Image (tube, rainbow, N blue to C red; front, top):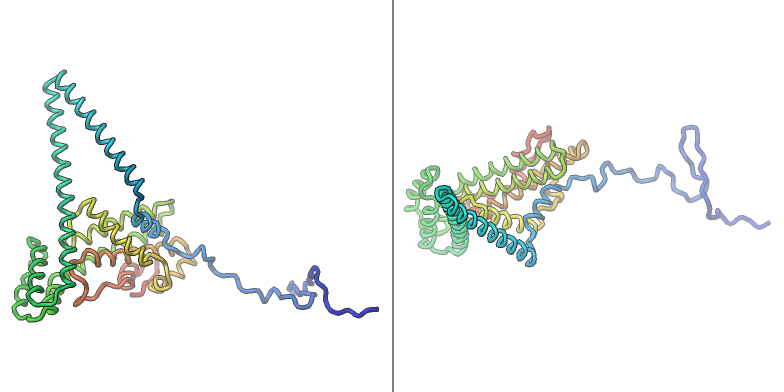
Length: 345
C-alpha cells in the first residue's frame, strides 16, 4: 500500500480536553490561544470630537456661487414682497383712517431707522476689525524706532476711552521715554497693553472648553452637542474680539468665525491626533468607561484649539514678548477635575 505523504486539506476537527480547551488534530493549524487579543475599544468607538468636527465643517464650508445666487435672489424677493405689501397696507389705511394710517407710517419709519442704525454698526464693526488687521500687518514691517512709536500710538488710540486699559496706557507712556529700540518699544506695548487682555481672553477659552465638554458628556440628545458647541464657540470668538478691541456684530462675528475655523481646517488642527489625546490625562480612560465622557473631553480640547486660534486672529500684535497660550495648558486648567478626570497642563 502507498505510504501517506502528509495531512491532506479538508475539514479540521477539534477535541475538547477536560478543561474545555480545543486542540487541533490537523497538523500545522493555529491554536485558538495563539489568536491576537480582542482590542478593548474598537476604532469607531474612540472619541473623535464629532461635535467640533461638524461645527468646523459647517463654518468653514464656502457656499457655491449657485447657492449664494439662490439665497441672494430669495432675500431680495422677500424684501420686495414685504415692502410692497407694507406700502399697500399703509396707503389703504391712510385712505380709510388717516389717524391709524399715520401711526402705521410712524412705526414703519421707526423700523427702517432702526435697521439703518444696525447696518451702520455692522459696517463700523467690519471697519474696526480691518483697523486691527492693519495694526497687526504694520507690526510685521516695523524696523525703526519712529515707526514703532507711531504703531504704539495707533494701538493706544485703539484702546482710548477704556477704563480697564488706563493703567496700561499710563505705564506705556511713562516707560516709552526710556526705550531707544524698535523691538523693545513693541515689546513694551505688548506687555503693558496686551498682557492683561491675554489673560482675560484665555479665561474665556477655558470657560467655553469646559461648557462644551460638559454639554457633550451629559446631554445625550442627537445634535444637541453640535448646537451647544456652535453656540459656545460663536460666543467665545465674539467675547475674544471684544476683549481685544473689536465690536460685537453679526457680520463681524461670522467673518471672524470663518477666518478662525477655515485656518484650523486648512492646517488640520481640528483633527484628533495623538498630541491632542495625550494632552488630556484620563481622556483615554474615560473613553473606555463612557464614550460620551471621552467625546466631551475631546470636544473641549478642540474648543481650546479654536480659542487659541481666535486669540491669534483678534490680537492686534503678534506674540513676541509674551508667550502664546498653549492648548495643553488651556485644556489642563479648563478640564481639571471635570468628570473626575485630571488634565495635564
